[in-house]
Length: 524
View 1 (cartoon, one colour):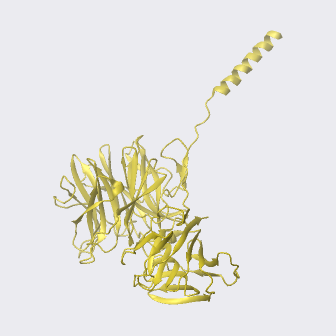
View 2 (spheres, rainbow, N blue to C red):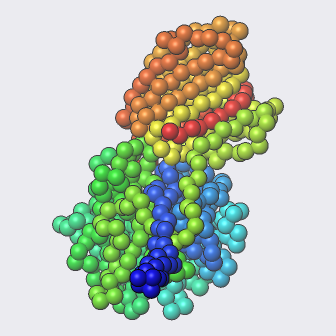
């Protein structure tokens, strides 16, 4: 019995020892979309060494085309704009910038509206150091009535540019074209050729744009977008095509569309494919958040492609909709989401916020002086001189404190464009809520306050980006809460292709300046 017991004990011990040595299942590290929060449409992404760079549409906002960098495709840091100063030949529609890197030089091929004739054309700029902005080389493509959405590839040592011919020509529909570039990438040298034409009867809805081309094995592949891109009636979707030669013929995938919207992420499309060092394929594209929708804009989201080695067609790993949560591109290590909040006290902080401004108006003049943000009162627009922040989520609190003045009105502003905005400001011993809708200015509410009130705090609480509560307070003073806050809804603020910005503005006597002491943003 002792012998049997010993055998049993050894057997049990061996079993437990095997269990103890069995490796634990690998922990799957995930990320959540968006990876670049807020209005960041038409993202382009490249990998240079171990660093990813992304740039996106800025539409009617300056400075033009925000640039981000990342080591893992999930955590992104803002580097600055492509153009700190807007090219003088342009007047807006800063759309669809595409990054390209070759022989130590970064290029960006971008769409902009030309001041001379108000047509959208494609320009090119370059730099050796992406952190220091780009040098503009002017227009590279003008295609009859309009050309947008450039994309550049290298094939057998030659450079080619592709673009969307807008379909505004008589008897010619929308199509994607291509042509050879000069070796320096700065001018078109070859005759145009057709890649694909939009099918007005199919899922594309007569549209084809936002093409991203890449080579794998014997095929060139293309992801492209169709249907309505923007606004609350959008129906953007993504299709797939391939060809054995860049010049075609291109064959559209029979299972198109391969990506479309759902309740979590609406109207996905227009992005770029990038390959990680371990050969995983990721599509950085845009989509509207299902909750905040147009009030937060088209945000930067990440979807992975996987391959069917039998058919040589790719598919999206998580199905035909944008994943809410997915496996990290890095495959290991914690992937934290950076805080979107900020707080600046100009009496002690040196942080310079990435302000944006209306590219259709004179650029606001401002500086940090005397421990305050000083914005000049010189803009003739009804909105005044506006400095804004991109809204990352619909639920937030934005606040500012300033010294009240008689000759300057200092405001918190929700800004759609110069003809559509809501402001809540103080000056001349009064608080005022105002709106500009379709160019018509209207005062919604006013409240007087004593001359002794100097240090004013204005606060905006937003819910889902469209329900707003404004309130004011004074340091060291108790104010009746029933008269210090007001609520408003503004479903008309988002413009067709972009989300509102929130920020500060000043109006008043020319050459006078604001005296803003603090600016803060806190997301729920």
